[in-house]
Length: 297
Image 1 (cartoon, rainbow, N blue to C red):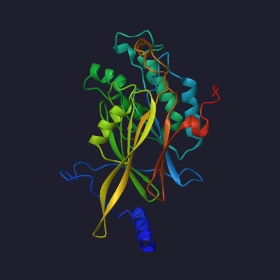
Image 2: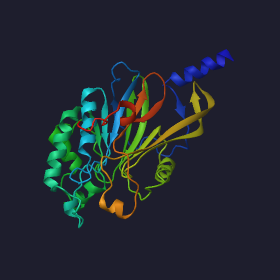
Image 3: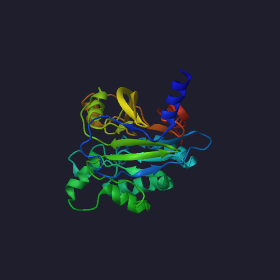
Image 4: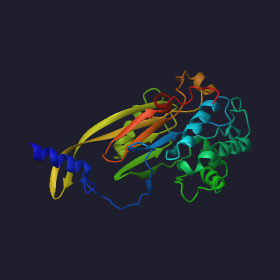
């Protein structure tokens, strides 16, 4: 029994492991970017905030809460950020302008100004359906996410999938590697958030899938059985996939009130990637670190 326990510990710590989630069809379709994230100071994990659905320019944008998050992130330079899309309202390109407080040009300028203090901590910028309004209007022009990255000077080190696209990224924390999938997404599953996440889980088998758009913070652990190969031996193994919807920094908009959508919790989740063993944990910035509890931030 003692030897078996030691063997299991060796398996969990080793990087020379092959798992078998299914039969391989195309095992080298696209090489994935590896993002090495430094450990948070004094901790055994790296940390990434998943921040999206800001809707800068909307009358519902919670600027005080967003600035509080930016202040915390700037204070912790080893923390990284993935921007989950719908960063701008872009109401000019729709017939619905009542909830828009500023023009598209002003929204873009404000967003770049907000992000500038944390620009070196941003590792990925997704585009949401609100940015797609611009993409549809100016076919062939530069993507909004690329323009923002160029203005911030991070276009060569930031992942920019573009309109309607998600990204598979490998996060390195210490000697552990975590493939993750992030996308803004498109769904009407406002109440039952796991409806969309289940569809994503069928499509992509990685330790973490994260989805924006829904304006709701929600997380669930999906555990499944598979097979692991190590040193020419095969083991029955249990794996965990974390499902995450990434909340919002916008209060209920007019259409949301009209359709009786729930009022959402303002803020963003953070994910800890542990460095010495394979494990993830998810928390909400306000709950973990009291971010935004001082509304004068």
